[in-house]
Length: 468
Image 1 (cartoon, rainbow, N blue to C red):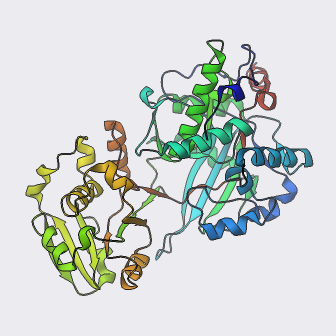
Image 2 (image 1 turned 180 degrees about the vertical axis):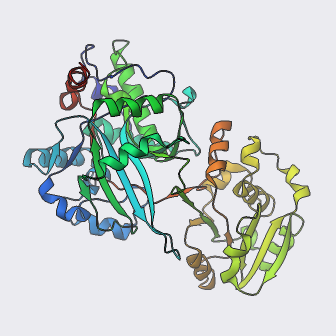
Image 3 (image 1 turned 120 degrees about the vertical axis):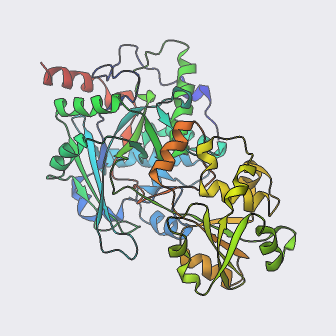
């Protein structure tokens, strides 16, 4: 699907429209929003209405969610021959019937996620907030990406946004604030939550609150105005907002002010300096070996590049490689190995990318294993290759090899936040499926409209009166 200009010109915006509080300068500009939320009478059963993000929900999960006529998946991943039209019809029905209500005052929405990692008794709390952020082009170097996108998925997101004028789930962005100034305001807002899940699909507890104090919101804006934002999750949805904004600008033919609501995108922002920001590893499962290589032939091809150490217990692989650069676990034919790149061969890595990317474990794996040993030449070919699956569960990797569903599993370490920041600031992208920020945000906790008739000048009027 693609956005046609004919579909956009029917929604002109007057040039006098404004929602700015002040000019936030050259870096990240954020704005409050009047969120749409489920009717408070439904909050007691909010777990039944929230949903996983469209790119992580399994087919079985989707099937169960679609059976609930009020679940947010009907807006985020609509069904039908014309999914965007189906989502719009559902949205109008929910608004008319009071299923969704819009907050009267604009605000920044505090969003906390409480979670535990497998095998750990510690409860983490990832603290963040949802707001509108200007949809910056990548070239502006305000919002930075770390992965590439698929055009088809971007077009689907842009088409859905064009038809519904609604953002049903926030992307996840990272900013760095070593002073942790904003957390004090977020903690205070959490004393009076708006909604809370008991346990979402991934086992996390999600809590939502709102900040509507104009002076505090200006502090949030001031902090972000001095910073860049790294996009952690939601590259396709973010690029969908970019595509829609660009189409609206073209339709406006120079008459737009830059203040129209379609210039903004719903984002969940968390502090990259916090120790509750978790990135989980994504292992590589080889479903086949090109040329029908035998196990011994694969090991022979690996040997010039890696030291290979047999292990007695495959269950020890994650512990054996933990914290060691360019080290991987290999499970092949029921046998386990620790393999580690020979340092002297790293200089052979000749992909045209930055040093920050070349230093990554996953770049080493993709270059020396997939290209040099398996003959899948270059990042584009590897991204398109159907012989690899990306699996986050370590035990699942071993089981699928044992069941004959895959030939080999390469077990990897997680990517660090420092590595993500280094790659983003170098202007490059990582190999596919390099990061899995955990937990994922949920859909349906907060909806954001970019329709003028639903935002209007209440932003400007409210904050002018509040600061008078």
